[in-house]
Image 1: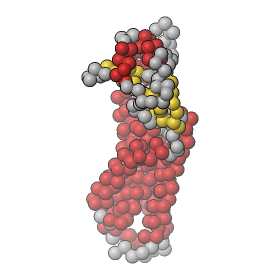
Image 2: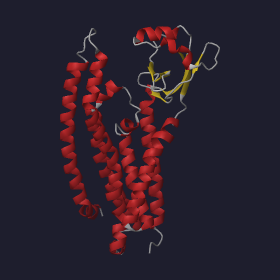
Image 3: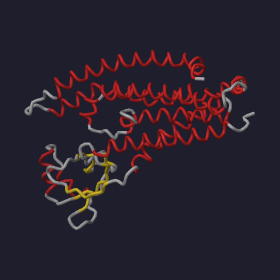
Length: 329
């Protein structure tokens, strides 16, 4: 049965292998180039130089290739679902070849488990190797950017893409088993995967653990930015804890008594010189309430999200096994 599955799937597997070799060569080249630039410019930046400007130049230089590689890795599980998962069973049902196999000594359950397991393993290997290479290549960029919880970065690094790829494949195969038509199954798979890509980063991931909430005093050393927007108002935005996932995009200001503070009342603090502006704001004894996921939860979130995908995958496989035992036609 494994040999038969390989014979049916070898063209797709070899195509994926060739594409992976090309991607690997590019990522190795990009990683070496990025490390050379990081060691020479970012690490080599002296204390007297404008290191912040150097870091921005470094990020601007490699932002596009890292972004494109990340988006490609996020898209690959969806492509696996569309072109490997959806046709896997529907192709057999539409052609009627499943009857030939089932009339042999191969049971329906074994036929299904071998096909799902074999292709799922190849999917995990392809995406796992790509994720490993991208994580290695982009590590200098990620270190400078300091946003490991970023939606695109989180989904395209380390182990989460592997769980996502296996889940997308099994989901597509399950849809194909239920719909029994290739094109409708592909369309439903595409819609389902797109919905999951939006729901998980913004609706599920922030709540995998209870966020940490705290009150932070705006002192001269607090990391914040002030600017004059189109409405000619000064606002406190972008409070940042290095490495953490800040869930608040804007913050309400509170005075020492805990009452909301009108941002317009410290417009006089606005200055071209950031140091003078911070000192002026610090004298007003203001605070902001922030909510965030600490940096040390990164790997916990990676394992939780990958584990969640694999748990859903196991449920889908169990459903497919129960469904294949019943008459399909």
